[in-house]
Length: 396
Image 1: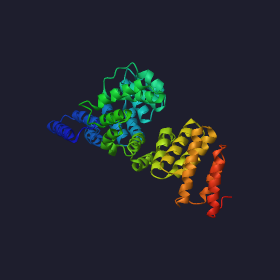
Image 2: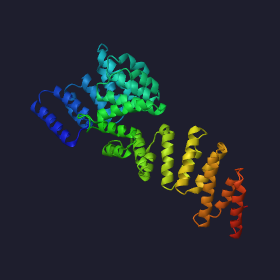
Image 3: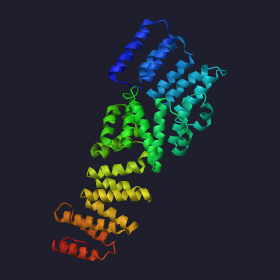
Image 4: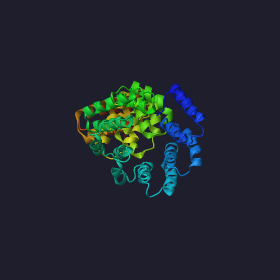
């Protein structure tokens, strides 16, 4: 974990001191490298570890640690290449090394083979249980993740965090407030602890706690303090964008949402809804409308349409509000949709009269109004057509 600058400096001085005082104790380099790894100083860990590997290039512990550093510094493929060196020098009779290789390959390959490899290793490698739960979460199998983990009493920060994530996800997906409260408690317990409060995971926990409490100003305090470490991380930007938008900073929120690369995330209704709202608040309603047009008919696309209709109305973007209310009314003949469409059409007509919208738009307003069988329609159309005639605007 990463600590405050003052604490980090103290640890670095102590670690350097141990090495300088005991230069001949080469094995100390492995322990020191592991300490740096725990502090998230993966590059420094590599440098220290290299000293030991020069003398003992076939060390199981050292090669595995080097692979883990590569995973953190680069990617799974780089880590896997290093782990191959371990499998080449490892004796088949060295069971723990064999299990370690199997376990870490699953992690380096993004969970590939998790269901086959991890269950038999749960009582051998402590992290196997956690990585299996993470695998279930990534597969959106929330119930399985919860069932597998619910009877485990957490003892480490990682376990508390994972418990929090599982409960938060289950609570949000199924609308279970009790699970959300449990998640808040786990996150606050880790984020508020003396050992974790100034680490990156600790700050993420406090941000998550406040996120669940909908205290987004507080969320931003913590996320801003660690954003430099997660610039291209989609999950981080997904939450960061929501917090920015929830506090009214729509310009930055839009930029953050557009940085997200995950296609799965970009199809999530939460993402689409927030991005559409950002577009509307940033006076780009056409982009919000195009988001809707790309969606297939579903309850979520209907909700997106409602958001566009109402937000555009509030922002005086009556053209797209009228289009959205028109589709809503055709999908569901609710009187409220007619009232919204009527108001948007009249608002757009006023903008045309004031010269804020092109006169040609009047033709489209009339077509939208004619889609409704309400008795008020003919009266409204008659007034609009009279104005068009008096001002020589063609509406045919």
